[in-house]
Length: 220
Image (cartoon, rainbow, N blue to C red; front, side):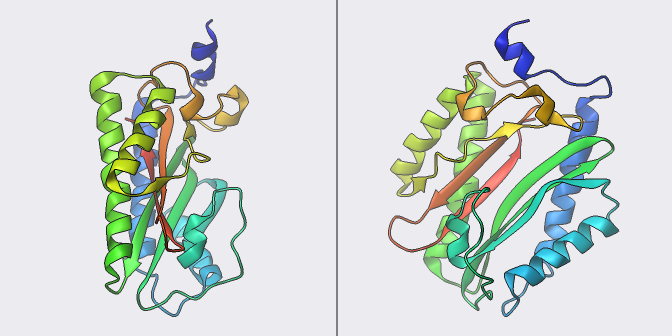
């Protein structure tokens, strides 16, 4: 087995349909949670709501910590702790990052939302989704390696006037737990990623102001 093949190994119970179901349930949770988050709410209160939504939807377990970031904390990477417990403003930005197990398979998705009408926050959130779509299309049409996907993503982000955080470069998912395969980051993967096994992550920063945006989804 090649090194690339080993990094894309799956368990006996894995199926693409099950991965897509986990993906759809994760997006359903994000949509429901985003409808509950309101200005004036603390980041910790939104996180508690997120756990409640996941439980009500019947997730089996959380496989990575639920992350909700408000304001300047949208610049934080997954492994960095939030600064304090900020309160969401009337004209603000936040993102939701959910990783939960459904039907024995790992769902993982994230998206950015805004309150009010700050034009640069609105533009940042929109640009993050646009860039994700561009990179996903590049993968689908050109069948390039993970390394090339993130080179292209950085190039496109700069052309759009945003800064891509290359400390966030995507990761494996599969039937739980994917971690046993030690696959590393998508952005370091030397082959074209196969369908239903990798999460493409895009995190942008505003070039001057202290906020950013995040979007991730399954390459399927």
